[in-house]
Image 1 (cartoon, rainbow, N blue to C red):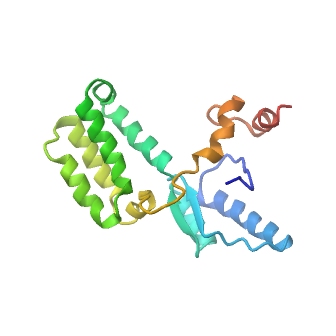
Image 2 (spheres, helix red, strand yellow):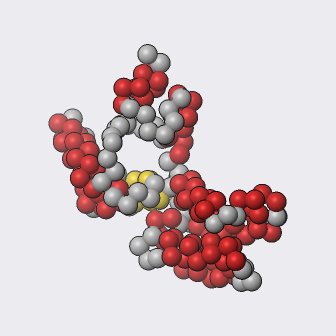
Image 3 (cartoon, helix red, strand yellow):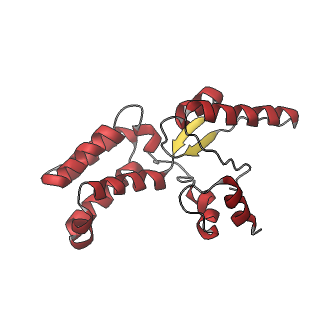
Length: 182
């Protein structure tokens, strides 16, 4: 996969995404290109998914597995589990297996999580509670599930930015200069 369009923007709201998608749809019409993707892989930004569904109603929205793992690992840190993750094999194994439940068929995820959760206490139990509340709700579970999905991440499309020195959210001009080595 190769990105066809890059869009640098400051907003992450439905209006901003709508403006971008409408501009893409309009440009595609001028170029006589049928802009009707089968699937869009994205991270889990709150406004992005409804915007995609609004502008591309026939497109399947698939969450990015890398961003899913990143969010769960962020919670591991928030719960003070980083040291335990690094030093205790059993904790590390449980968390990795929790992330791997995304590879189970959707109807089996709850059983898989329940089996892993058995016997957990303290902050590890809190991680499972977070996981259930954040990732296992009806509208979220299919997005983060990668069972039978060929392309599970869009991270490789973002990878060129890693070597450009762009960290965080650069201003548009410096991101373009770094990208194209001006």
